[in-house]
Image (cartoon, rainbow, N blue to C red):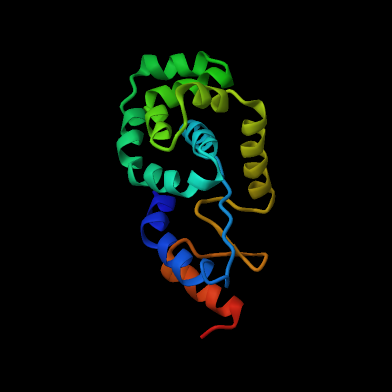
Length: 170
């Protein structure tokens, strides 16, 4: 929900006021927190660089709806997930959250989505990103790194002053 809040309140001002003008670069790195994070992150990355941010916006906008599907799982469904292999679990979370339909909106065919969900290189990339964040002491999302330093900001109104100070802008 915290990443969703930033997406809704801070992403557009960040891009419009700083990124498009070339003052700031913005790189989105996933930090996996739950099983569904893996599935939706793999599919969002599967959409490709040109559609990544548009799909991310949609994913965050619809987050309460698809998260509800996981919150309402029966004990039997949870037990079945636990009994699965990691690869099976990633695919199952995507199915339970109807994530393939989200990805299809951004040009990811069902066959391509399945490839991305089961791609060990894609999973390794996400796991490496998460491990790098943990190694850096990052414990929550969103976290912003400004000029190489981890910012304590989690909201746009906290981040913008850090950006302005780092850039020497008043």
